[in-house]
Image (tube, rainbow, N blue to C red; front, side, top):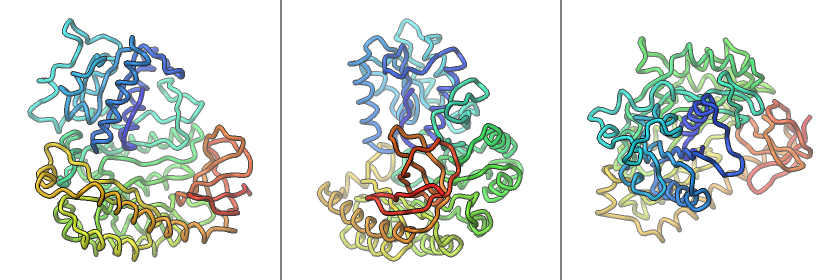
Length: 449
């Protein structure tokens, strides 16, 4: 079982693995498997290339394996994947519920066993994309079995509470591969969080495709800030972390949660906000069909910094969007330089077939050499900002979760998203207080108090 892409897709992969385990399958540690399930991503051309490379490698190293492909790439281009040598079955997000049966050979027929392409390409996908079976993963701790008997692999698992997106950004294929926004109910989320706590879990990550839209499709509509309040007030969860949220979804009430639950020596709400930016140029944001302006974004970041002075605040930035001029890129650099951001996820623009930006790319592409140069400038800028942010914690104490490691020394992740190298090995999944001793190229070193 292999999953590519975002945390939400990883949660889908965990759910598929749980379904296979419930049917008596065992995870192969050696790579020699009877069945290989590949849960794909389609957000960039590189993600799709990686999926094809995995298929080719599987055919080369394990030619007798049945390869079943699902996920966003399988939803976008099922015929393309079905034509690859070695692929036994293809089922997009709309038919993920059939993947376990496909993997076990129950739906294979004399034509090679593909889910009929005319069935995958249904006229209306939104109501059925990713059924409730895949709304969340069965969360359990490493070395402990969940309620279906599957053993978890992650110290800090994701609880996927929302799927789909209706934002229609000009560069994004996700609305076509994931459908409209759909939410898991608050009661089910609370039950899963409570079970995680009962099992001894230390940190849970709320995730979704467009997480800030959680609850708006429920009856009556609900708000993410109220859900977070419920989880922290009604369970003993040691730490809750929020994954990526769009700028317009950082409400005053949600930001206030950082002051309430993100304080003290061991904050229960991780002091960490990831806010996609994409560009600091108003003209580029408009071509992207993003729903905020640079000054809106800046106001949200400043409000978060005021509410949580030591929080990590990160952003996604897309470089080389069609028509991006040197002046527009400079606007982005200057904008980022002014903001108290602590890290960036940088992406070169990737044209996705069927999106408005595909046509823009054909008309006014940005040359690859310019993209590489701009990526380098942003990396240099962010390296300086990251070092300055980390430098202030030398000699201070940070609350962290210890992680699994194969080295003789331990590792951990602070509540404000800083990787920590520990002076000695320590059991995973423990909430610890670490005194910071020095900088590393990308994180910090420290000792457990």
